[in-house]
Figure 1: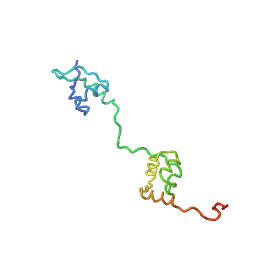
Figure 2: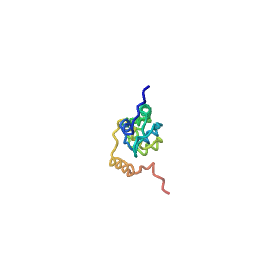
Figure 3: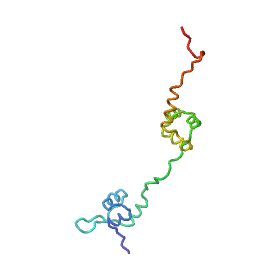
Figure 4: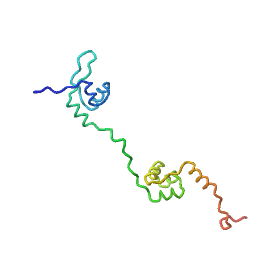
Length: 142
């Protein structure tokens, strides 16, 4: 009968690629109980190597951080409305989505977004357009 392999905290730290001071907390979170302690005044815990390997392999990963978020379905007319001069905040209110979602949809659709100065020019042009003063649209005078 062979004796099971026992790792010191330093060996566990090297296997898990963590600082030795976090070994006890990490093993506790993974449910690995220490077998005993190293000898000496400041003896650290020792763990069964097979249990450590199994727990680390079964632990959930952090996930991939380099993946792009999934593309959002673009509502019909959103791109056309933007190109016609509507602002991202107007579109967000119209389609009941966030401004960030509108920007993402425009980016996903390959639309080159307006700069802040271009947006301000459009806004001022829209607010400074003269009112229609044809005789048919004027209110009758009393």
